[in-house]
Length: 96
Image (cartoon, rainbow, N blue to C red):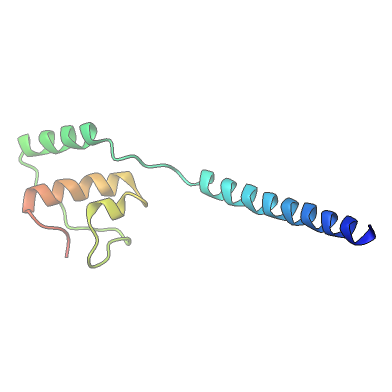
């Protein structure tokens, strides 16, 4: 009987520890900003820049890596994602 009580107590403490870890993970995930693609805004920006005949700048940030696409920048900064999409449409390639 004593052994089953210890087993139940141990299961409850493991569940408590898992619940605390899950709550910590959830708070870490939720503390980061969620950056949605917002395709209508991106397309509107690109169309306006093309009408103004503005040449997109080369990448100035620190997140771009070889093999990335614009979508990879979305996890860091929506503006860099938008600018990458414009650069890609204008030049037909990604950053170097």
